[in-house]
Image 1 (cartoon, rainbow, N blue to C red):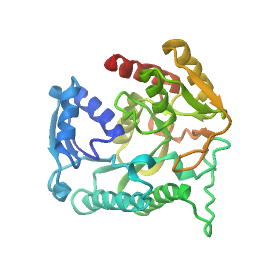
Image 2: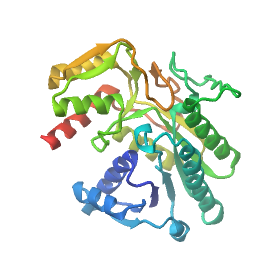
Image 3: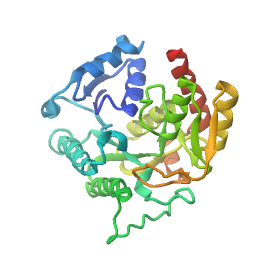
Image 4: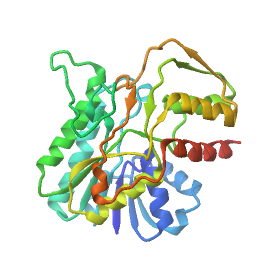
Length: 313
């Protein structure tokens, strides 16, 4: 197949590129602002020579090529990188989403468009995990910074459902971890990895949050399920086989890598989508298209962290 990946230098895109090239039967059109960044990544992975790909930095040429599948991996930087310019959530999402939809409408209505959404679509809550009956309650007259991203994702998903005749799938990823993660992103797991690498004490709060870390292999499997069905217009929560608690993560890395950590009373959160105690979903609707996650969140952390730490050492 011919597969376009928009935002090819993003964390999720790198894992997909790695696996598509390893499979070696597709042609990838890799779209990103910097060709140097893509080429450095391709040189760093051993499978690059296996596959066929074109590196594209001019999105104005996007409609010029023939695609069977369009995968939108364009994301907005974390808070510590976009300098709290939340308008980027709206502008970037809308721009690249419209580009993909226009391609389906004008060039190939039979193509599949895979758009990455987020668990943030469910809102700021998560005192309990999301499920098929979850409701996102937005205080219309008291919007906060933490509401913006969820609104962006709801807007995109609603627009996709309105295009009933197009094949568009929204994949809601809650948490994702791989060897290609940027360790300066400022998440709990990247701070933990930095503490091990720099032999520093990790300072964390006393809330025992639960997270669902999706593995790159399971995500790739989910995309394969969507491609196999092709005729879809819906959204799926993409889950690991089992979430993991923060305390279990701390216990594992303390035992395996001598992580040192200190627990303080609840610290001020810097999450752009709000504090989430149980940030995962029990909605397994994706099973109807054949998705069966093989790896638990702890499996993912063990395996991918091992690659990161071996590379650095």
